[in-house]
Length: 123
Image (cartoon, rainbow, N blue to C red; front, top):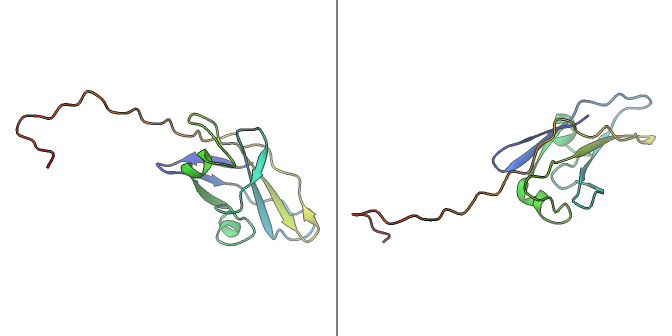
C-alpha cells in the first residue's frame, strides 16, 4: 500500500516492495486518482519501470502538476495513489489505495492592508 507526504512543492509517494508470486518484479505502475474519480497512470515523474523510481520505490510529483490536467486536483484534495507490479507474466492487481494520504496544500491568501512604513522606499 503506497504512502504519500507533502513537502513545500511536491507530493512524495513511496511503497513497499511487492511480493513476487511468480517471476521477478521488473517494474511498477503508479496511478494517481484524478478529480474525475478515475486513476491516471503517472509515468513522467513516477516511472516505476525505470531507475531510480524502480529501485527506490519512491517518486516525487510537483503540486503544480497535480493541480493541472489530467489530474486537476484542487486545494485541500487528498492525493490517492495505487501501485501495480509488473513481471514477465503481466501486471499484478493494484495495491489498496494509500491510507497515509497527502493533501494538496491550501492556497495562501493574498496579503492585504499593508502600508509603506515611514522611512522606507519601494525604489
